[in-house]
Image (cartoon, rainbow, N blue to C red):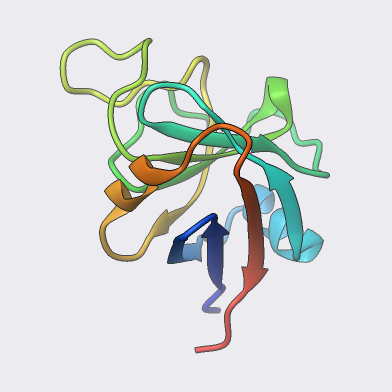
Length: 125
């Protein structure tokens, strides 16, 4: 099942695909979600109305991964190294449930600043 979402953050718009995990399904069912962005290195994150425990959580993620950070009940967009990274790896503050990937170039999120309004919504097609 294709679960494409649109992420709008200020003047940045990107499409992404949610995977088939239990966490991604909870997020899909909660859409649309609106929040204010926080940033941490090359990561945008924001609290969402979902509470999920670690589920196949990863301590290191890939460029463009979307994650759910259980301690902060937060949706995360990874587009480069964070302050916790070692070398060129992309390391969240603590393990995240990977819920999908950005389609296209995730580095467009470098233009998003803290406090920017972010909207996650279902995308048709």
